Every structure is written in structure tokens, then in C-alpha cells.
Image (cartoon, rainbow, N blue to C red; front, side):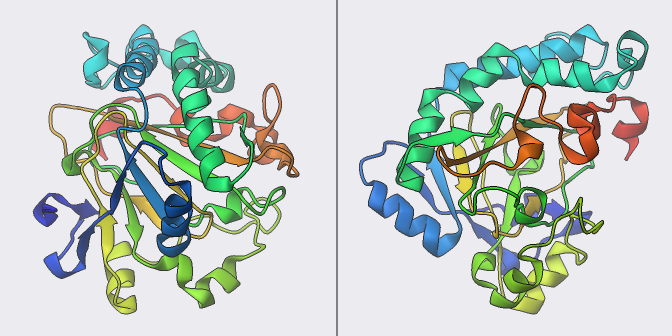
Length: 303
């Protein structure tokens, strides 16, 4: 049973009547047609134990090991405890190349861009799948969360058939601030019509949804869906599933680590912002343009 008392979103408790649990499936691709039906109905599919747990934990150790090198994570690095200090700006004055090197680490890419996730994406898309070159790596400190948003507005210049895979890099209980979805939002026709075709770069619009999650869900008679996650789980969802994250409420400076990677049909047109070596990203800033490229300093922990 979902522990709604462990959920906070933007500092607000989630009432029991608005909290719901994500529906999970076995990670074994025995029934791809059932997977596709669930994705079409719910906008997401949660696959339990679909990725190799040891490989996921190796990716976690690799990322936190790099952050230990710049003084942001205490030993042992795999525990992901923030020190509240950083030498990143001094050691790497240009944040983009450093963060790119972290996001392109071989153990991380073996999980995010490997054949296991590729087979899952292909089963859901019904064809050979290819990942975006760009990887969104999230280091979420205590008290921080991601606001509600549609992914479509960030990556709609290529294929119309893109899936996001959210991968917890370690065990992520509710207290750590996992991903959260507005139930049935992939079928909110008015919102889908309003946001379809909008582009955060071209239209200079904010990417996040302007309403807070709790009040918005209540206004729509919808629940906020999340779950406890384990290393090896992955959730894939479409571009019009409204999602964000719960607050990280872990004590002791523990960081919630996850990544997002997008997959599309291999033969479809590509959004040129997210492919290349390096991908140009928003405004040509590549990896320097994402929040996680900024140091994990004491000011971040205090927020």
C-alpha cells in the first residue's frame, strides 16, 4: 500500500484521497502487445526488475565517484551523501565538458543506452529503437523536486513517437522523491491540444506547468501516482503524460540519483538538439545548459 504520508510535492503533503500507486508489470517482455496497450491507456508503463541491478548500481557508483572527485560527495561515494561543498567550478570552470563526461560514463551508458533498455523500447514502439545521444542525469538534493511538465515541449522537432525512460540509479523510496504522474493526464485533451507543437526554445515559454501538482490534481479529480522504486526498475512514458517528482525528504544530505533517456523509432526524423557529439541542446549550450551541470554546493542543500 502506498504510504501517502511519505509524499510531499513542492512542500505540500499529498492527501490520502489524491495519492495513488503506479501499476507495475514484470520486466520480462513476454507480452509486448499487453505492454503497448497499458502504455496507450495509462501513458506510462512501470517495469519491475527489467534492468540488471548490478549494472545499475555500477552506474551509480561511477556517477557519484566522479562527484567525489570534485568534493561534492563523501566516501563511500556509492552512498550518495552530499558534503555541502564543491571544487567543481575551480577544477572545471566550463561546466559543460565536465558534466558531459559524467553523463557519457561507460557504466552509465551501458544502462541508459544498452541493449536491455533498447529491447524494451523496441517492444513498446513495435520497431527498432534508437536512443537520443543526450542524457538527462538528475542529482536531486534534499528539499528539491521537479515541477509538473510535458516532455513534448522540449523535444518535438523530430519523431512524433518518442518515449522517455526514467531510471532510478539506486533504490528510491517515496522519501527520496521519485517521479510522480497526474493520473490520466495523457487523455486530458484540452491540455494536450494547448501544448502540442509548442517549443520551449522557439516560443520562449516556460517548460514547467504553471499550477502546483496537488491543487491541479484535485481540480481534475485525478490522483498523483508514484511508487517505491528499486535499482533495476524502469518506467517508460509518452510525451503527453504530465509528470514531475516528489520532494526528496531524505536526511543526512542523501542525494536522489536518476536519469532520463529518450528512445524513438530508429528510422524517424531526429530532433537535432539531442543528437551529435556533443548534442547542441537548448540554445547550443549542450550539457552546460542543464541544472545538474551546476555544482552541488551548500546553497543547494539549504533549499
